[in-house]
Length: 518
Image (cartoon, rainbow, N blue to C red; front, side, top):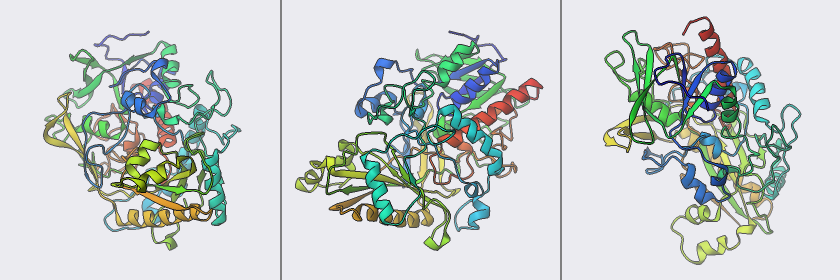
């Protein structure tokens, strides 16, 4: 394996090995640029990945302390992964493009009280070729002639009920899961453990794809169990090194030419806020005061139906299908933004905790003992940027790395509450149209898995953190490449957009390095 000297100041340092970091790193390595990629977690071996949600939760989930306030769960406000591959090990592989109007939130929705809406600094036409590149790279079904996967029974229930309600934009989803053998990875076997890491590797995860490809170039080094804890710059404000804590507990430094941060929103924000200096007293890239603010996730809830016949929702891909009729913007519904309905299989232990909180005895067991009759979906709506929703650092509490514990503050906007009320009503009706004996809603019980917006990009440095390429306004050789840069979030799962932006950024960084602009 390639190893670079810690005093090598010509390397690009990438923080994070998930959808953003690994894609940027591999794209640069393929161009012959030397990259050191830091990952706080360990690299799982094939034998470590098993079809067991409980075991995999402990093996790849980021369990270091985070504090939630407001409507964020107090002890587990966000769910992301601490392992090589990042959250691509846990994701469902739903790969949807944002819609053109969602990139122009301020222009489309107008002024909404107590929001901080802005348009993206470019339009859909700029992003479209990068979407095409990302879809081809990831093998997204339903695109580029790639066959879709079959719908499981959970999908068939969703489809049948949705059609009874008059919906027609229904399919078995755009998934970065192989429907046929591709690039040495097998086709999906419909095992039903997508979020446990996909033991056979049919699902696109950077552990299986981008990381090995980068290593094969000879221009890439992966340093695992290496938590970056600080960033250093010179008197001109240029980043010159990162400090990291290795598995042995020792602090070391890595010199660099360019720093690209893709640590998922919480860690990206924490690292930059926790690297203040005399030149940057409020943290790196924070002259606007916007770093950490405008935190967005998605409006999210679960709907479960106890159906008159067997469903066996646990068999097949997790998000085996979706209904898209409501994802447009229709103010007549009483809210801004759109909604998706997507299948999801809730495990029995999850339902036992969340389906009927506080229930005991027959009230809960009478449902759980008919687990094979349950159908389930997620309702997924657009979140609106609010400056008051933010990630900040606890003033005194430290974690085991000696870093301030992050605080994730999130309050539901009235628009979100209206989306949720409408979506839950439609979700229940989908199952009731097929004779569901009971329906259940699970609200305010899920940690956020789609985290975005705390380092939004824009052209005005007074109200944004980085430029349209993810380059910090304040520091020319600092880039941010994860969902932090999103100015708005739409209602779609964000990973495809993150990958598209990462590919676009890699081309820009390589071009700037070639002309010695950074």
